[in-house]
Length: 165
Image (cartoon, rainbow, N blue to C red):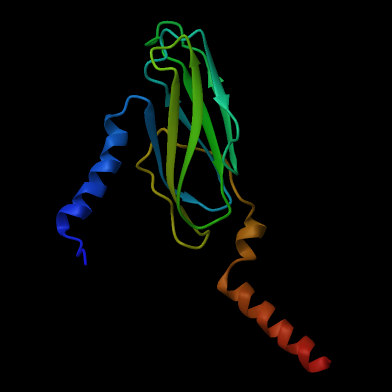
């Protein structure tokens, strides 16, 4: 009978911090996003200064698109990605995008994209992530269809239809 002790739980937390120390893993935190909107964020690829070519490896997570940008003249010489995300599910989301760096210091990178997705009626998304840009907003009609009043109307209509039968 093995009873887990606190040290066992601490060991599992250390595994998560290994991602932060690993140069082949890049984490992009998009903050709090609104469901239905599309957002974009730049992601610099460390160790890519010597890469001749950068390739995003399929498959991409649902709702994601990625563009590869070569090093900017006068910049740090590193390649970057433009990551766009559109999601229709509320909650926490963590997805990985795999990138091959041909001739780079690191042959392959894993770009972990993290976001918390809120519903359209949950208030206002965070504005603390200045590099995250709204690319496309959900339509006002789609938001209006999800309000509490719209739900009550649909429920009342269903009751009337059942009574008519």
